[in-house]
Length: 310
Ligand SMILES: Nc1nc2c(ncn2[C@@H]2O[C@H](COP(=O)(O)OP(=O)(O)OP(=O)(O)O)[C@@H](O)[C@H]2O)c(=O)[nH]1
Ligand SMILES: [Mg+2]
Ligand SMILES: [Zn+2]
Image (cartoon, rainbow, N blue to C red; front, side, top):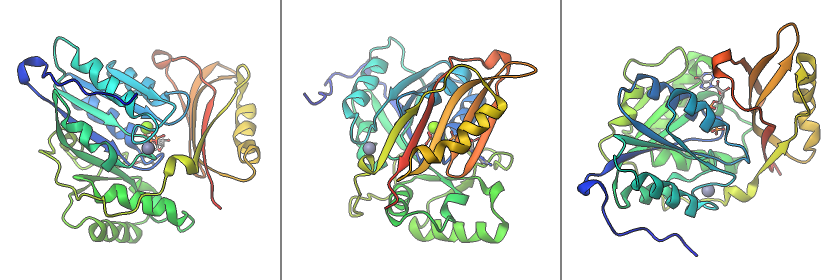
């Protein structure tokens, strides 16, 4: 049965502003949200939708903030719509409202499908932030249907956050900015990249002042969930660093007819000193980050999201 929204208003009619954060797989949504949480000095609730079977982003956010609700194994804009309703219900049933709610969408979500939730009982839509990875925009190998999807996310944005500008040269960056300006004329663009953040850029996440982004309903949306597949690659016991490198190097061979868009996991590496690492794969880039002892979290298998490049 479809989710039924309650018709009462909690909190004496006070409404909690919602910021949706979208952007393609691996664009840098969680990284930016964590940065916002670090600098915000008020209670912010977060809902994180991870398309794979394990919600690694939620644990990354809980490490910073503690107030994260997980929506795992599906996409809130299509396959897990009821889960979104239930997550909002659980916030709505709290005696005290949070000051703000940030909802990280899955990388394959069409933000225009979820924007109406921002207007449901007890909430108000503050706006839509879209993270855009500069290197992804310049990648000429991205299939057309993914490009169309990324562009339809950009169109609905109230704020565009450029990420990974550290990975591209200045001339290329100018091209990316021009492309964004053409797709979404007048939409503010800030550089939110690691190490290059414009002062105050991410603070704007919590002060968008309403949704003005274009309604993208005229843009045809492919059914993205069908084109992406989430897999779990089991990780047997702690690995040596060489074992981990080999596992990652062999990953593409496990999916012979598909291309890996994203993978992540928290894995124990044994060696001179045992350590947990966060493994992040975006396209061909692999990032392995050792976790400090106080960041230890439950180990996971590797969640891999592949796309059909045919
Ligand atoms: N060089 C560079 N790497 C970045 C930047 N922002 C994010 N990353 C890296 O990109 C990878 C993905 O970042 P996330 O923040 O997890 O991206 P996401 O959009 O939340 O990913 P999904 O939720 O899986 O779609 C991680 O390895 C980050 O460290 C940036 O500005 N520069
Ligand atoms: Mg994320
Ligand atoms: Zn969806």
